[in-house]
Amino acid sequence: MPRPRVLTVIGTRPEAIKMAPVVRAFDLRPEVDHRVALTGQHTDLVDRIMEAFGFEASYDLALMKPGQTLYDIGRACLEGMRDVLRDFRPDVTLVQGDTATVFFTGLTSFFEKGRLGHVEAGLRSHEKWSPFPEEMLRRMVDTLSDYCFAPTRRAAENLKGEGMPASAIFVTGNTVVDALHQVSAAEVPVQDPTLAEALSSGRRLVLLTAHRRESFGTPIRDLFGAVKELATRYDDIQVLYPVHPNPQVRGPAEEILAGQKGIQLIQPLSYTDLIHALGNAALVLTDSGGIQEEAPTFGTPVLVLREVTERPEGVDAGVATLVGTDPDRILSAAGTILASGGKPEEAPNPYGDGLAGSRIADIVVADLTGEPRVTQDWDAG
Image (cartoon, rainbow, N blue to C red; front, side):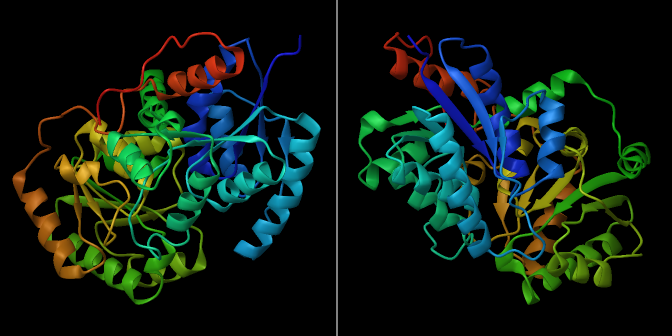
């Protein structure tokens, strides 16, 4: 009798990081035939993550083209995933998060009348346009899903409030915590020379990441102005900014921050180096969802450069503060943290316990084979 088939689909670097623990968990479950498909929404960035976590893909659509729009990604993903699904005929297709790859794969799975599992389901900012387009992509793919793997109880309650049946909702924790634990345990040395120099300089590290579409234009310029002022006020800090390649980010970053004392603009960090930076930073300023989830493991305080977040658990736990891109709010909150002189006492990560990937694989395998589950839903978060 043929084994049930499961397909994991990955489009971007964050998806690769968060799906790596799921892929690893399925590799330990011989009851199913599991394969990985890449859309190519990100290319070399995903390749590096797969190499770091030790897995390969069976399919690669390679859809990335210079200057492509959401319409281009949508069309290419719909057509490419149609061919993949018809070739492999998975019993369940798994996607993660809120990208164009996730939504258009989910729509293709629906068109092909297949079952869909959404990893990191139920996150909500409750603002249609923020983050854009991620908030609506995530909401829409949840409605298409047969398995909603909610990372926290709050995410599960969001789904229940929207009418998702309880039988389709599973609280698993967030797989990014699994990935972080795996990388931290490997103790890979720092690779980026600028990061290595910053960590050995004796100055307090401030990590900046900023790239969201809703901040393009005046908001991101205001943000960079605040970072410049922060470096002027505190001569014992080193701001490290791995600059996103989008011209609407890189242009103003180079104009406002390049060459400023106490500020270093660098290329995007490898995932292992990013974990080193998060673990050693005195403060993180970010608009990234993943970093909001990762920093609490190290007790590193986070200023969230957004007006709303679909990850409020960190705010509730006191490890994250919403400041938007307003310079006064950024400088005030950063000043308070830097004046405290150290990190707060570490508490359990509100986003997971490092076992989410195993839970997800167990849920799917149990459902496809009829065998009992060997794990339970996460009882925290």
